[in-house]
Image (tube, rainbow, N blue to C red):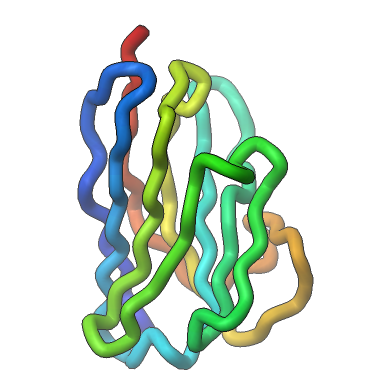
Length: 125
């Protein structure tokens, strides 16, 4: 079993960048396809991005394309989410999640096997 811990959240001004990290322990992260989800206040948790086990493939939600980049460093057992040109509507709790297999270009919360506890991101206007 793998444990996931997000970090790097905080308050950032609109237009600014922020990088989130997701550190894994318990098992090597290279065993898992990794995703980022986010949950805005009063809304459902939604897919943001996915990266394959060794980073060869990535996919993004339409809302993330062009501004957000998912990456991973398996040697550090860490996954990242680089967010640029942040908007107030990006305000949410961001969750790191893992699953054993790559199953497509889009993921739902029920698809995932492991979750972190989330990192809060607030974008001020």
